View 1 (cartoon, each protein chain N blue to C red):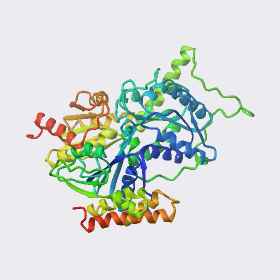
View 2: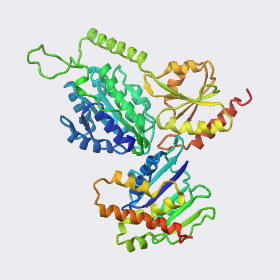
View 3: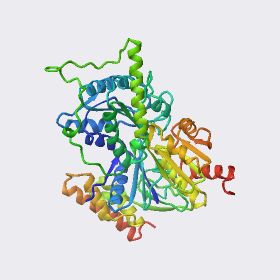
View 4: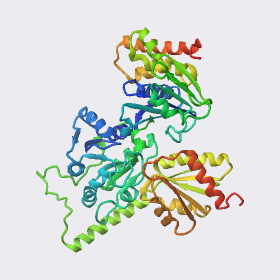
Length: 359
Length: 182
């Protein structure tokens, strides 16, 4: 039998995390991601050295992750939009303390308690840091089951490599849907590079200090610049976008996650009508793949941003283009999942409005 | 690409039907997605899931205009008849849903699954009878693939229960092939 498994997205994240060496998970239940803690509770129990904690709150869970990371573990927490808001202080601390950790946000409709349907309303929160202070988090945006597995692996790698929190930005659809997935082999924890900074007992060595309280302004400024240098390195090394049918495109749709998947269906319909349309899908939302978009503007004069919100990533598309091309928007907030037909219509309508058919 | 909705009361094995079908189609080498209803949609005792099977990439796993529906109770018929794709087929558990369809562009296939299950000695196989009928009519997968999918999902199940499931599938398929459902 082939290695393909039909698995729910939430469980894919859990299994991929375990295979990436995650040995500490703390979380607090919230729909539509309860299958992540459910999965982790069983998986960690079966592992030697694995820890699962159902914390008393989201805030407790992220702080437990801080502790586990300080002690050297590959650590993860997960939640959905309102719960992620509660974790923001902890994420800011992770960034300040330069600690690796993976945070999964299975987005639902908001603001407030909102609903439990798939949404992309947390783009700003995720990509702008979310918590207080001058920091960034790496944000990865999977679009289907296989990518949930692949990007969860990547998330742990990036977190360790750059000693920084990494967020996986999924949505309720991905969390609940089952799709075929093939997992990479588990890593060997002993082969990971050593972490010479962890707090694991100072017997026989000088003590180490990990803290974010830096009262001296000069020292704090230097810490901010140090973080900034790291963010510049990350921005140079990992921006990633995928393209689909862009070679001859006159109109390029920019979408990520579930929206990108549906947009592909819309683009296929538009192509069947003879319209030259393609897709650019940011896989990293921070750092944003700005160069890929800017380079495309030499040939493409119209971009259509499609999001499951009222318009958030569109700001980054505009900043990337620096006025070189027109930027249009189509969005459905509140937990509505558009059909490929609907996106196809939005695309063709814009295509004719911009007179792209005649050129 | 074909979209199928499985819908009924919780406890009728509705989600299991969809799950088994999806695994079977995946092992047949097709592209598949399985999307269950979750959260508040599950309250009130109804359950449903959508399975998309395709030879190409699947863009949306959502049940907008399904081609097929396997309907186990009356509320589910009310919910899905209106959204079916033109020319679609609805498989009805006729012991629980007696009314006729209101749309004349749809085909209905009635299977007295509860009655057949009683003949087999267990009402727990109602879902397998419906699935057998569904597979025999649509030919989207084979009964053998379904059995393989089932044994992959419910490992360590007693051989007698697996046999009963197989008989359920067979009886559902026979009912279609003999033409009793017209």
